[in-house]
Amino acid sequence: MNVKHLYRNSIRFKLLLYFVLIILISIVTLSAVGSTMYQRSIEESTNEHTSQMMGQVKNNISFYFTEMENIIEYIAQDREVRSFYAGQTGDEWALREVMRRYEERHGEIAGILLVNRAGGWISNRLGTISRDRLTSEAWYREAAERPDELHMISKPIGRNIKADHNYSADQVLSFVKAIKDPLTGNMLGVVLIDMKLNIIQQTIESVSLGKSGFIYMTDRQGGIVYSSVNPVVYRIKAEWMVSASNDLIKTINGRSYQIMHTPFQNIGWKIVGVFPLDESRSVITRLQFYTVLVVLVTLVLAFAASWFFTNSIISPVRKLRSLMRKVEEGELNLRFRSRSNDEIGQLGHSFNKMVQEIERLIHMVYMEQKEKREAELKILQAQIKPHFLYNTLDTIQWMAQDRKADDIVEIIGALTNLFRIGLSKGHEIIRLSEELKHVESYLIIQMARYEGKLNYEIRVAEELEGCSVLKLILQPLVENAIYHGIKTKRGSGRIRTEAVKEQHKIRLRVEDDGLGMKPEQIEYVRMGLQGSENPEFKSGYGLFNVHERIRLTYGSSYGVQVESEYGKGTCIDVYLPFVKA
Image (cartoon, rainbow, N blue to C red):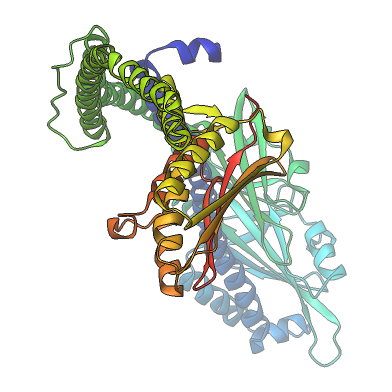
């Protein structure tokens, strides 16, 4: 699926997809890992079980092997038997009694045969087929060549020996060992014991490996000593078990078998366990089938749960979206109702507050527009008043000129300029020259009022002549200088006003040589200029209003700064942006 196409789908679809994918990945991962681990556990358990069964069989058979070797040792130590091997004429009945005693105690013994090096022999259950000497038999020569070893012969076919109980060669297992003179170490003869193979058969068949697995035993050459009848055992090659590994897998007749083998100590014989892999894997197959079934059922249930869960999220979102569309069309009286206080409920609460605030703002704008129209009407109605005032002042000025009253002419001219610049046709920004003219007009009127008490000086840099400034910012500062500085001082005072450029700013300075301010008064004023919320800091001071107007118009980088020293005067600096008219 294209990622861009996925983003264009609904939230419901994406939530369902994400939930199902997460659950599917989790289940498939757990199933795969669980199946693999279970398969490995089954295989390890099967191998361990097979190994235990083989070990049990080997231990039981080893017990009989050890028992046969011990019986040979016990027989060899009998006094009558020693006499027989020494070549002395012994008591034949006593010899037979020794053999009979062991044969009765050990029912697995099919016969015992004693042969000395002179070729003489004696037995209760075994005899010769021909007159050939037994010392020429292969089993005798092998024992004589290696007298210290116990020789085991599987299926002793071709011997010059017959049994009176009609045991065939493939029904017995022969144990042969040489008898040595304890003094000289010379070989005196051989003891042969035939053990019934059915004891091994019972031991092997007492255990089972699954439904069709089996255990069998091989000799040193890889020949089969005993195996249950089955079509597989004779297809197992002896060279397969030559390797050191006791665990291998081979395919026989199109079926995979696991073959395990464990050797008998010192004799080279082996116990071999064989079982088909498909039996253990059938459990895995069933497990995988049920796993897939559980995955499918889980996915169906997960899809249903995801559908229900996404509905619980999407339904209120859709409701909120529908309300938003209606609000876009102008229905501001709608509100979102939610029973929960989750994120969607909080979003709905914010939506309600937003709609309420929009409704309030619209009402406020409506009222402001209404009031503005009313104010504009009042302004139109009152436009006649300034013109009437200007005309009246011009008449008074003309009459004063006619009567040669120059001082009255100057005051009326200053008052006319003061009103004209103060109104400025409603403009808030005027030229710096007009602002300075406004201050000068104010000072002319104040000088007429305070005869001999007040002098002033106004200086402006030529490069600032054409700049624009916020109107009526110097007059309140000059007024403060007069009423709080010059008026309270003994004798006359002087107010100096200047305008200079500093970097990219205009600095307007109003400096007086009046009474000045005490340190606590300076601190009081500065706290007010720094924005204290206490209205007591700002009441009665025009410079606070000037400072606030400048900051509201140009920003916090501009405003008023005050320096004063008690008894020497006050200096107020006003910083404005350098703006050409």
